[in-house]
Image (tube, rainbow, N blue to C red; front, side, top):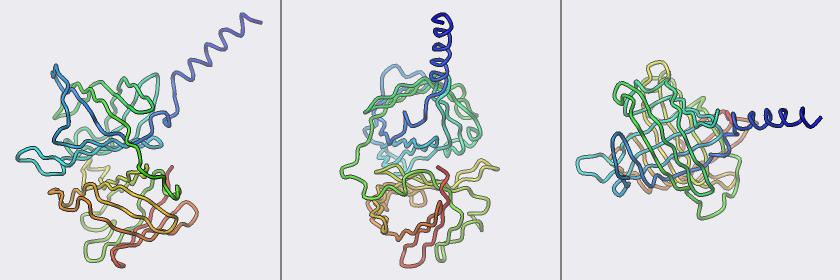
Length: 263
């Protein structure tokens, strides 16, 4: 019996090693150090903020507050889905504002995750970044206050959007767009992109809180004003739920958005 039990335990252990729950790496992280390409020494984000959000198998990373000479405050945004498989952190790219040829591709990384940190290293490969080594270290972002109501936490996909004279979801520049919004307290981050053309249309990020009725968002970045002029702008929205759907209204009646919860 013991001879049979040992192989069974090894198989069971191998199964857990091959696939770990994505919740193990979920969180909001600020990059603290990096090495790209043939860099020998660690680079620091002294003049730039890089934030990475991982939640329920979805991820986004944003570069903003860029104070480097000749750069806009908003630098770029990328995102997609991820999984932990065979001991690797695996990213599937849905959009990549720096190089659309990366969209649709999958990259594997070695990784380490702790209570306060996340680290990934491997290579990406696109037309702009050929077999390009990256090594990044992140520190977990902690909220200053507890989240009052957790019902928005998770992944949401837009099904309807109206913004007064600024446009309507599914029409004009928003035609054939996919819009994903990730709530991972204290950050909410969202992006508009076209999966067919692999193009990025825009996105934003906020610090948020929700009391069960009112969503309060303080802007971190907004790609449609890349100069950073919306940084710190506080806005409130009214939220109503209907099963796995949510409606968000704001901008003095000009904003009406509806989302369906994916996860």
